[in-house]
Length: 117
Figure (cartoon, rainbow, N blue to C red):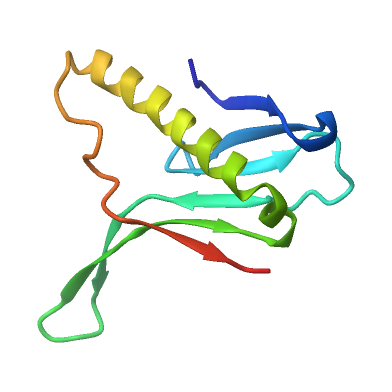
């Protein structure tokens, strides 16, 4: 079960881990033991943003997005598949915690895949 991280072997048997950040609101993918400590991929959940600088205040829904940097491009299929598995594990845990309330697509909305390379 996905608790704080989910690890897997990638290309050339390198180890990668999805790790929770911001109290589990987002997850990021890192290469274990790499010199470059920046995340290879970041997932940001869908969220509501309130603009208080307008009268009356307005809000908008920011869609969920999965962002890959250049290092993730060569393994983007693996990044997306392992992301989906980590989300499924997280949601299964949430569903069992709330006795089955909710559904697999809830809260995810449309996920946009963004290439930063």
